[in-house]
Image (cartoon, helix red, strand yellow):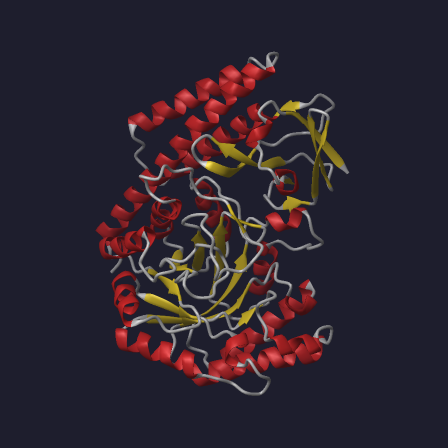
Length: 494
């Protein structure tokens, strides 16, 4: 058991539940089992490994809200580190590395951005050299973080704009962007709006809805949704056929918990029934989701992998021409810091590729700012680093995502999920969901490896998982983020 110690002057910058969300990761950025606690004024971070690593902390950046920031690589030592200084050091290190990569790829960095980065670096230098006065060092480091954050967001925006423009000069961008439908077919007004903003729709084909009673399948809602998509000329992704979390199976399946053989048989029967019915009528099979951290029927990691492998085999046998994708939730794997899971999302992906099961691509599900079921907010350029990790297999990526537009009561959402907004924004400015969409969506479309982008909740007026995460509000009116998606599609996609 290794231990790192930190003096923290600005304790209010750490989230109220932040101790249980602090983790340490090694060179592969996979979290180790971590426990953080206070010993007087000292933050003690214990991890399962003795190796050096980076410490990640949910830190409140001035004007930005809670953001996951990481230190640079730290070794164990008796003398405590100054946390504010180390977060500033690590943040600037990551920005400079990302800027180097993007400039090597052709980014023309504006002079004012370079000057901002130099100013943030000067502030960090002041903090690093004044640690004998902890209060001063912390305050200066905090200013450096704020300056660096603004610089990082401008850097990501410049990269996205320039890369999209370059891609459009060569050929129209062929990426697909759309939304996952809820349990009901949208009304006429909403459908018209969706056709303007989307060129792909994901149909849920949820087992829980289709086979609410054992042995009795109701295809009518899915048939209606598919018929509308075909009439509107939209591409169709169907799935996930298997959703490996608590919501992924009908209630009657609890009778089979602990009986893997029969549970797997029933789940594969559902996959076979759906694919047989809709083969040749959809453009993508989303075979399985939440493979890495789902708790469906208490399945173990090896059992989840076996189930996905069998599902891929069934899909390939029935509909060999249609591409398949398997997706993973919380792709930064924060959940590994406080549970018994052994495998990170990349471990599952590598196993599927090595098994040569015919998977056509991978999906990453990013539900930003939701706790405990989602991922913490991160600087936008960190998404570029994540995509680099997932590009090593040379397979296309599908990104599903959402974030909250506000903190209002949401009676149709799943209970027990907390909201952290993407930005602390005055009432007269962009809402947090719109702000986040403006930062993230262009960066995704700029990457050639990202072929599909799906907002994974349609409307707050229907039953859904994440509070206030839909593109339409509870009155079925489009939110600003939806309007941004519509404009982005018209300006960037073929």
